[in-house]
Image (tube, rainbow, N blue to C red; front, side, top):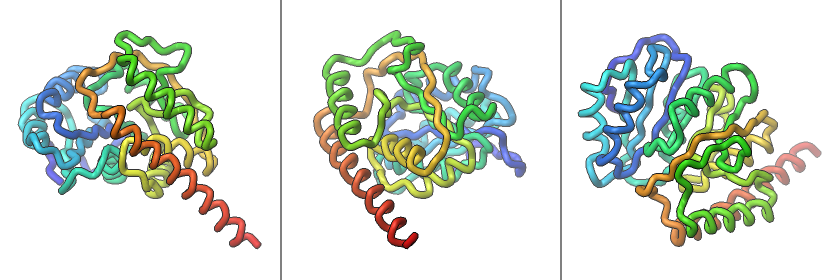
Length: 258
């Protein structure tokens, strides 16, 4: 763990976790946007997690953090590329905030969306708040290419058939948690790839955490790391694994209750 700036010993009110994989070319813009936004307050810590990048993303982030003016920020590095889910889990379990939010490094959502996600958890609306592009109030300023839309709809149909969700969009890269729900859900998280959002929301519902969807202002990033074909197959396999794992846990719980 490398700290770009010292943080105070007190528990921060907020933690923002940002997973990174080969983001050297745009992480500077992302951090500058955050530094210049109302989010940059002493009560916020930012936890950047480099998922074994090959383009010196961690070094690029450190260089920017040394000069950009964020109050509290840290860069964590995984020794090898393990997947977005593993990076977010690592950051969330190292975060100390009473409210914890993760957002994609490309900032396809706005800083206003991030602020609203924090506020909804802080106000007690829900223990888990998740952004969804399918919300009637969402503003799709730059939608995804059609092949990504179709692959997303196909994946969502599979999730519904497996009874893992009733939502139309589980994959939007903005979700917020109370500290207790973050510790419980990420502590139990097994999925290390892109389907980790599915497991989080399925476990939240299964374990009785209150959840709430929120609209976003969305602009698709052309540099998305998701490969619809190969990653789509991996996500489908993960969905079946999640269904089996939750079913197995239910059976074990019923046996234990006898």
